[in-house]
Length: 200
Image (cartoon, rainbow, N blue to C red; front, side):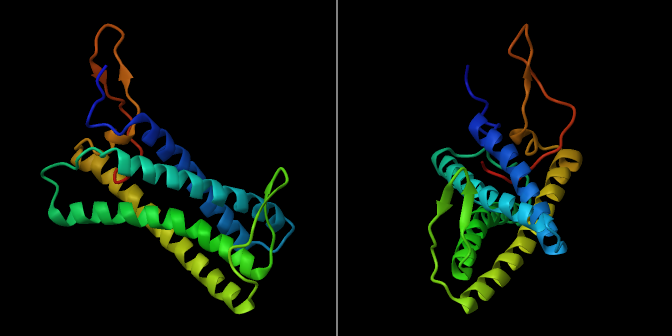
């Protein structure tokens, strides 16, 4: 059976939705760490570290898939400004998914904090112990986290625009579809709620 060129490949779609859940979880965990000074902070931090490293690894895998396999083309009638915004926001998401975990790793290293991932796994430091470096990286990590939150909101808004207003197939390209039992007729799902600009 031939692959539908208007759909992202299955690995890209699986990684997209898995990472969407992980990134949203990470944003809420980060917000909880900033908002609380109770004992829950330790539990949130213990979750934050391995989740960040998992996002980094999966982002590298997604980037490799993206470079190996051409994503579905954007609609031919998409205005040039929207086409540019789609591509720019897509690469911004990749940059943030890769840089935020690395900056967090370096920040903890500069602060002299152990980077425990659980099950006895501990990452080596990637920055020298330095209080001023720690403070700078902490500010940068928080600032980029806000930028990631804003980019995710933009991503969601664009998804709704493509799925509910333009109805141009961009949103469907990242969704699952059901096959008819009697033929190879594709039955599109009625509910559309996902991400349009991502390229797996």
